Length: 101
Image (cartoon, rainbow, N blue to C red; front, top):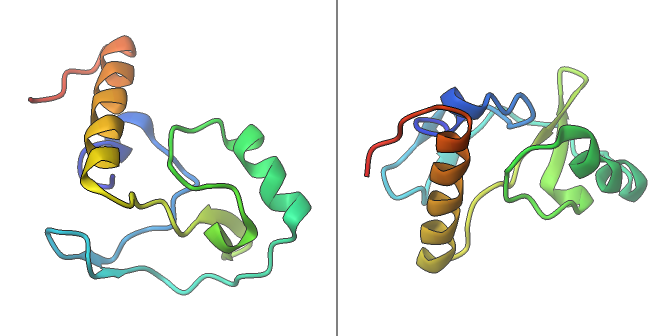
């Protein structure tokens, strides 16, 4: 997400990743305050208009320096990863970006 897709799409709503192992099993992010209400988290997906994979429940978002960020935007399995990569690649192409195979 951070190396390939964020430079293309921007996604200011993603909580920064300070470190991630190549498989994404260990991810270190700044500590976000987890205090969003259900109503706030429901509005987020409409307000952000991003292609991220966060589900929109309060536990997926937090506040970092008063800014709302997605803190859980990972994918559960290899099939989802393939689908999202294909989707992001198609969207990037649509916006005029070239992405490798």
